[in-house]
Length: 210
Length: 83
Image (tube, rainbow over all chains, first blue to last red; front, side):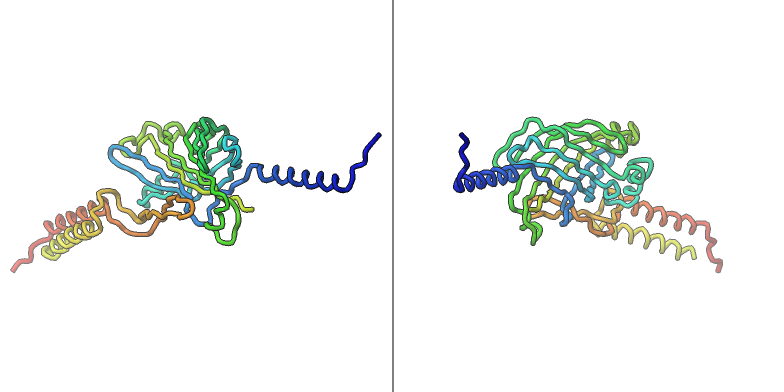
């Protein structure tokens, strides 16, 4: 004997299905776009050699990161820095830095970090710290790196930053060091003036409009 | 002529040192841009805004000293006006 569901039952099932679907959508990972309309996003760099200290920054930062507030450890994404956006205070130094003997910006226009795996994930409130393993590509050479990151999820804060828009923000901060010799940038040369170690300081915010 | 060259050399060197000192006595290379920190109030992120500004460095000072030295050197070979 088959019971036909009555009208009340049908309504309840429809509501349950809707709630389940809405929950699935709300819990889904969000995609954050890191092209910053305010121009704050930057990657700073410092080379501290015995004879000279070089400080600069890059503003041409873009990329996307998929972040799930319920599961920050599943974060994936790719952040790109336009090589030509690297700036140092001295114009001749900048010309050399972007030239074919150093970064060769014409042939290698981007510097990329692609996050693949999060480890040692610790979340407290809206902030997550983790060690991220990913592929860092500089001057055409890719190397696997593990770097510490701090993610801050700012729910419904997009409107405060970009008036007229609704959505969430994701702030990423990371400080790590690479060696230019690992990326075939004049290895072993001029180390008294241009240190082998390059300290990188990434401070970026991405938006996920609703 | 000898005297004029020497006066120009002194003015060049003294002027360059005064300009370098007044601009902050930068012991690094000459800068044409300087970074200015800006803070985003919503995210707390610190950004860098580059402003166009000429800040003479040791290369500027060196060029001025070299120029002054060359002028003073040339003045040695300029014959003194006979009375």
